Length: 253
Image 1 (cartoon, one colour):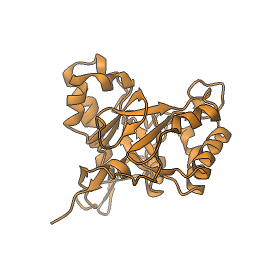
Image 2 (image 1 turned 90 degrees about the vertical axis):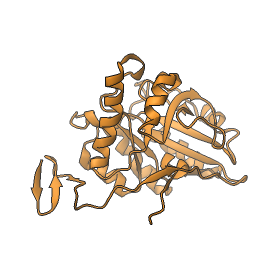
Image 3 (image 1 turned 135 degrees about the vertical axis):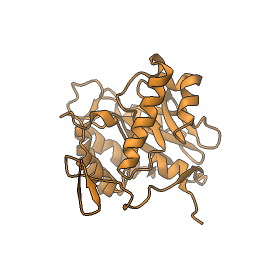
């Protein structure tokens, strides 16, 4: 790290938050309950794969924003987004969430490692100006572990698990939000079925990994993603980020 003027720069020339930078917004858990005639969907991208950047222009063409879960320890790996790319996402209004520091299976680490994965990731994101109050569990089964949930609740305000299903925004467990994985073998008919029942308090969280060749199990091609987002638009779905839907900036005094 080095300094230029009053702004701290990392080695990739990405500005970091400093004492002289704007404070990270203080947020509280306060869900926005959609009206009965609204059909609200959240799109979440997992791991911070560089290929996810191919989805951004599609989202923007419809005026949609998504949540991108970042493994903070992976940003120097070639297949993952670096801090400059993450900053670009945020500048476009995308939501930057934590996916822990090293993508450890939180079910299978000791308490020190568990707290380290959660606290370090959040601290790194906040040092770069992101509120970092949303967690996406790696190996989502850990979301069903009460010990893990209790640890998560000490740092984050909301967390997405991998239990399949709708999320009732008034009655959900905010540390184990239900969702649907969207992989290469999900047809448009399957996709439409995921969305059935979305309305009012019942929201749908759609969970993506890579944007790329259909030969990869967790990948969705750019063309398929385009068709899926077009389906949302054509059928009257509103798209929100997890932060937009579940959090509010706390009032300042």
